[in-house]
Image (cartoon, rainbow, N blue to C red):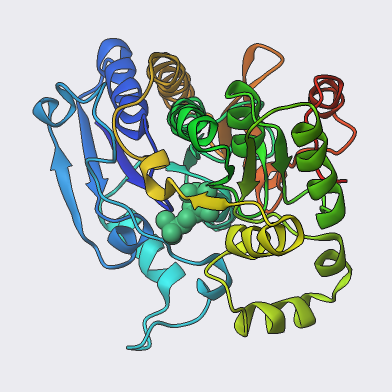
Length: 358
Ligand code: F6P
């Protein structure tokens, strides 16, 4: 008998279901033993509070193309995972207890950065863990690609494409805010794919005067409009110089709903141009996975299944230099894969005339 627990944790994304289906299909096709799958509901919460259901074949039928997660998800912050809950429950001990009570052979955990810290902790505590890299941010260390990312790039690109026509008709400056608080892969790729003129990323602090220079340069060349793609976590050069504490203080008293509105205000005041802000928000994480993510997540799932059958645990299945790899969880946990300001893609974007406001 092989008993496998599964959970999806953190912000959802496209192809979570495709990845779980991949694991299950691989195991059903290759295992000799009888198999039981247990799905924990709403991420680590289900494992802590023993909320689970046994999954049958029916659960995995027709879900390759379905967005979201059939298990539900939630954010369970790693920084408080060692603290008892409001009723004094030791969360880590509870997760271990539930794992052993169900006599699980392993846990398959699908998640991003925060999820991987807890997955590594559980692995260090002696549980058999395999993880799969999900996030629209593509910021997980140890893998060139995460599932969800390409689907989100598609959606964000389409949103910016739509803005292009109306920006052009009205001759306006448009700011489109794209998800990515700490890391800018999504705004960078969607911005390039949609022909944005300016892309502002968390990794490259911007100078408002440089942003305005670019808008004015376009005006001089007769372009009636400018498209600025702004990451949620874009930061000005002045703010980047602040200590973490002072920056938090600024945000606590912030007069704007987000950085995009502050930029819009500055551009409007300095240039007199009409500026509009569009925020696609969670649309970027919703709906069905694109074909790339369906294939990629299925492949990751199959590789995870293979590791489980070989009883190799403590790894994230990733994709490096066009090969599927297994990366020790201890190497992945707590590290971000950021956009380097010196990366080739940034240099190439600059060659194309895209400004990063630096
Ligand atoms: O981590 C994925 C992500 O969509 C980020 O891009 C975004 O900043 C964040 O989650 C939004 O979080 P929430 O869904 O909790 O509002």
